Image 1 (cartoon, rainbow, N blue to C red):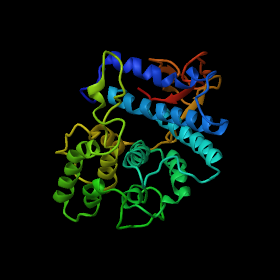
Image 2: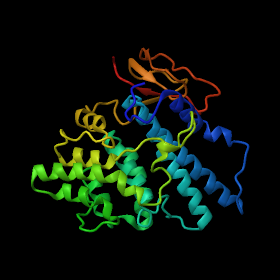
Image 3: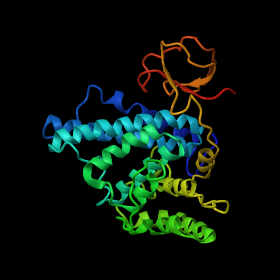
Length: 317
């Protein structure tokens, strides 16, 4: 276990990831307490979205290889889409957002974390799908950081000078600084202030590492992914930044990424022939990474808590 934060340990991670991955199967024949079926579906899909988000974060925190985050990110975006649809049916608002980013700093942070992971993992298709959910609710052209994360990837985004939450000010200023050292200093300042800032806000994750008891708890990691995305997009020097919440290896992954015909989450469903000789893995089974020859039929794992067996490209070595 090559953990990325000191608070996590193997037995806690193994129990936690199993619980998150089995969330949907555990609730398959159960219902949540609600006033009506539409509300029950919204509660259920919101819980599934939360589990997918936590599974993604704790996988990174525990030290899983970066490429294994791709199917988890893809699943998370799908969960947001399903949750948004359920909210729309419950509230009668077809364009309702799955996250209230103007009112709740915790939900804004979740939003920019997801956007940043799409950027750092070079998943433009997933980014477009996620941003569409937020834009449709009226959040487009409203917040500087939201737009600055997007306009390098998605043409036509505006250049604004106002943002929803004051705690993001150092990061916004880092983007617009003309002085390289000042930009780097502001990035570091943001990383130092990020965790304490959320201690003063209503969150369900701050100080969660203190509540770990045996292998039980809600801690999944503390990550300012948006700081990494800003450093990557705007060429900010982060060589002196070693703060715990800064995901430095993700920035390096983004900078060293090599586009190829197999990019954008190459995948093959079980039962289909392998499209390229090399190593593949599936979240449907632990330690599944193995070599397949082109044309070889990809195997299926029945009764997996993950669901369908989908194989993802993992390189030639």
